Image (cartoon, rainbow, N blue to C red):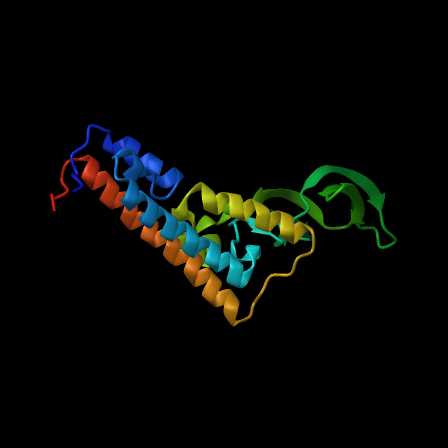
Length: 209
């Protein structure tokens, strides 16, 4: 018989459940509940990755494994916003072209070093896309809102996903990709229920069976 009464702080239980699914139950001494709830959630999450590949986890603010930025460029009197994964590290004037337009030498950070280019579009700075428009980024990646509820497991998988993208591993868009995304998101939402339940039990509100 398991009792919901516990001297463990509900805050500690909630944090433990976020760090690892089921750990909150473990702190309450409910080992079997921790095993089945936590193990089931982790298994469901890993099944999603098995079906769709590691790139089913898409961290917001990244594109093809690299940080994504919004760069402002001035062309004449107009300002254009251009997405890029190669941020500017240095800008200097580079004279004028044959048409008399001002030119700029731009150094960009690229994988493995720095690339320099000459352009007539004057750069006006850049900002990480999550700082520029976080709602639009999350709106285009709704699966992640469920996936992140699994806690650090999702972040580790996202890191591995970025490494795979940088290595040239293609992202799957087949039917299995949708199934994998669904599995990983449902795993996160189930963990949210587990967090709420474990916290409630730690508060002494659970009913004895």
